[in-house]
Figure 1 (cartoon, rainbow, N blue to C red):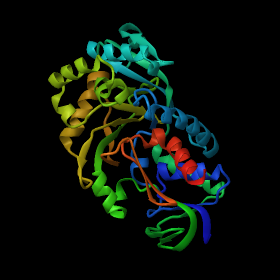
Figure 2: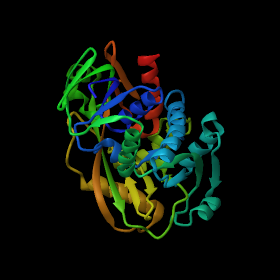
Figure 3: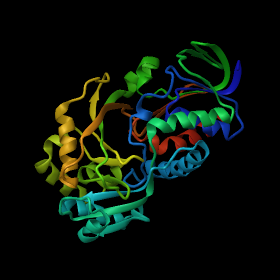
Length: 369
């Protein structure tokens, strides 16, 4: 294809979401991706589409719109939804206070508060005595490393052209030059993630774009099934919706005493479960100007300590990996016009899986009316 309505640079979740939003309008779309397949942040995460606990005014509405889009994409592309719902387990009374306050707020719509006894009934795998839990029905979980390839294949069947292993070199108004040649385009979207500083160094410097490294693991099946994706106390001071509760200050003070090192390394617990029963466990947050390739054993130990505090002895670790996403001065999204008909779109809050579809609809409406 020598011309199209939209060129998308980047085949991660943000890029594919823009391609879908454009195809729904009947536009001709080309996606340019420097790798042979999506291999970065979009496949190295939990596959956890999160609504509950997101920031109330911007991120949560985007997550709700994106959740509906994920249901459509999963059905069309043959992506299995492995878990539905999320449960935040409060080990400490201060954490349970946050959950009860959250449930009373508008953000708690549809959520259910479990006391300690009900938590024990619903989650007999929990080894510790816990204060209680919050059940949310809003979340879904897919296997990210499989879903992106299925999503791209579905878009191809809908008429999207992909150029894999094709780096973008230069963009001029109405044209993009890439490794396979050049293409005339009505508009261009750069969904370049943490590679943004290499392509747009001026914007990256002004916006203080950096990289956040996450450490994650997969554990062998433990012999039980979670009712949904699980989180615990440390998550309540990282997710903006929970952290906005007045009770969160008391929880943070308790965690500063109990879990100072975990807080310093950005550790909090998310536990997702695969179709085979294996557990995907993380994560941590380490910020740097350049992506750090090396995992820290002490950080992994802190994550596993938090896991054992909730579930007791767990199975062996079978995989370890790092994930990376961009952060910037502007959050949760950096969307900038790099020319009249070109937009740079970078999710700078680690919420790409949860919000990309809504963000894409906004961008395409801005470009095409």
